[in-house]
Amino acid sequence: MSGRQHRETEMARRIRAKGLAAGRIAAQIAEEIYESCSSHFGTTRVKSHRLAHGIALADVIEQVRALFERDGKSVPGIGETLLSAYESGLKRPGPEYLHYLCSVYRVEPKALGYDGPCICGNAHKGPPPGRAEAHEGKQEPSGVRAWVPPPISDLSGQGGDEDENVLRRTLLLLLRGKNGMLLDAPVLGAVENIRRRLDETLVSATVSPAMLDQWEEATAGFGRQYMNTPPLRLLCDVMLEFSAVRKAMDKRQPIDLQERLCRMAAQLAGLGGMIMINLGDQRLARSFFRTGRTAADETGDRALRAWVCAREALVPLYYGDPREALSLAKKSRDLAGQTPCAAQAMAPVVEARALAALSGGGKKDVIDQAKRALQRARAAFSQMTPNEQDDSAFGYTERQLYFHQGDALVKLGQAMEADLVLEQALTKYGPTEWLDPLLIRFDRAKCKVLEGDLDEAMRTGFDILRDLEDNYRTDIVMKRAHELAKMVEAKSPHHHMLAPFLDLVNAFSNDAHTQRSVLPHTGPKPGDQVEPIS
Figure 1: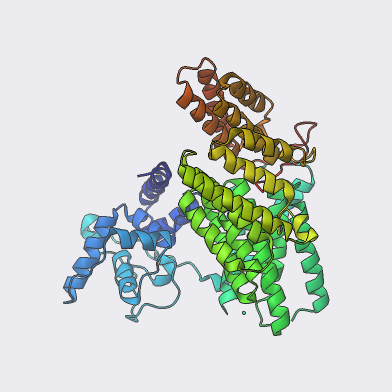
Figure 2: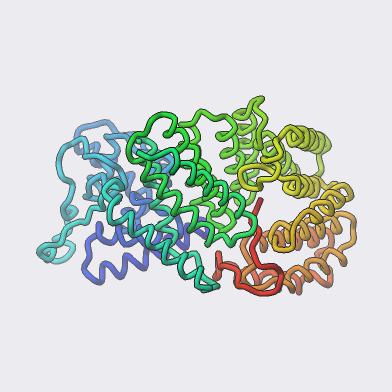
């Protein structure tokens, strides 16, 4: 079990124990587990019911098999892998399996997070067999029954307004200068609810052309703000616009207006995913990109679809499996085809960075393959329009190209070439842009390690961390610091500066974990704004 799964199970166990002590039934406890754990761990409703019962995957499987046998059916092929896929949201159970899951948990499909009635047409609510005996003949208190959450479509009224109010209150506090705010559960919940409602609208779908013009201008403005606006502040602005677009799509529009709405939805969802990467929530980032893909597919625009896919590839590149990043980069390249667009430059750069991460920097054929990808990126960049080359969110800028090329070359072990490219990249960033230059400095320290100058690499690392204010100790920054320490340790396990550097990194990493996604406070250094992952 991973650390994240362990924390999820521990939280659910505490909620279950308190719920049982208070006399609540399993369905009520499951809803409490879902409300508490979904924003932190991505816990689904169907998983929350298993956690509420305090049983393992194997127990559910055996109960399902027993019910099949009771009904005179052959034992099904359901196993832990399939049930785990249901719980993670990767797969949806078919009507028959859904019926038996409802029977095991004694709830309706909606309580497990699935729309529609059960195929049996009967209610599944009620105390599980043997409950009365287990409690020495005691009955449930009168009026206590399983609470079934309303479907998402029923939340478009008051609940939708409340989600927007959460963001408005957060935005108001930010505008009043309240700094050091956390990306907490209510804000995450509001953001996720708004995204899910647009998902529903996209699969079901009058606004004036003038209003669309204003929204398109606002969307472009958010892209310009992406590099120099604190992420939580920008997230609130983007999500309020996102919600307005969703409301316009509640009713079918003329096809030309509908296409423009879908384009804005795709861009805003993609921007939401980019912000969530910067805030360290890869689960929500993936969800936003999934929504963005759905919206982009409605437009038929190859360049837009490729852009969403290229941006999504950054999630596994920074937080997951480079192989997945490589696959998404190739998919983005295929989607772009021969259409001159930002993704034609972005995708091969992501491909090169993923290849470099997989190679470990030692294989000549991989180095050659990655360098060919970088050449394709430079050629594609030269074909982009000036507007795309000046747009760091919906396009791809020269400084991003230099930064990402340098990062790939570091991973390939090409220290001298990487340092020259990274030095060029640094000169192209403004004084208020913070995060990319910081990551570039870590990459240049890695170049020193590759060249054998461990003392200089460690001094650079110490300089970065000592200048780093509390609000800038994000997970992505600490990850780069750990990578630097790991490279030095591989060269010299007993280097005299390594232990104190690791102590500092670990102390800051703990701060980053407890103060995740804190907004930067105003101050003279190291800059007014956080510059996001580009």
